[in-house]
Image (cartoon, one colour):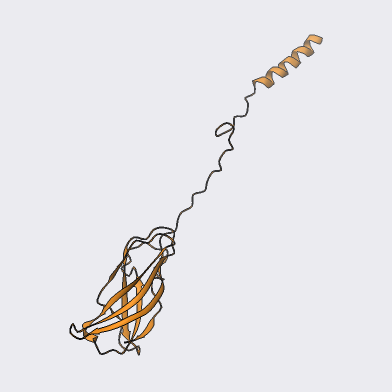
Length: 165
């Protein structure tokens, strides 16, 4: 009987030693890294965050009128915005007549996420209205041609400002 008890005990001990040991994942001695969840970045988002009148100049000899405007474009998105353009529009200061585009379109460089670009731009007033306007309603639009893939295409326009010539 004693041999039967010893046999049972030996079999139990032997069975325990045959069980596979727990194998940790990762490198020995290092805590395993958590499994990261992918985080998709939002596209660029261009907004005109500052827009103000600087000066106006009427050049009689060239029959041209120029308006200088200070414009700040900010990329509030999470990715870099490629180079694009700013377009500005004007109408009579009393609100009559339709909106007309200034005679030139201005380049804006690529803007990193969270960064902004400020510059004074000179816009040429179209020839048919030269010297006839005393006040202008003006606004600008970043990425007017919709080149940049953005979070929102509806926030690219500056507030309207009224300027006296």
